[in-house]
Amino acid sequence: MTIEEEIKQSKFASSYQKLAFNIIHSSRWLENFLKKRFSEHDLTMQQYNILRILG
Image (cartoon, rainbow, N blue to C red):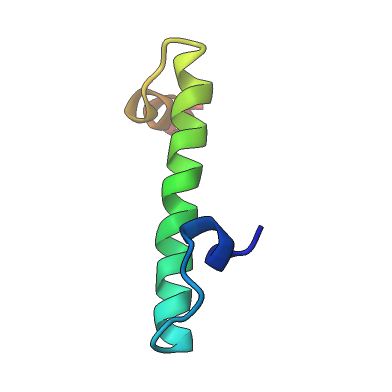
């Protein structure tokens, strides 16, 4: 699915605006994905980060 289909917007003011929005959208998607996976193990993102640093 393209970013245009995902947000139901066919035009952007510039390629830069499209890129910036795509980065924000992708980071939010990844954050939600990780939160779901961590919650399966009763972890928060902060707790995982500490474990990653210590490991």
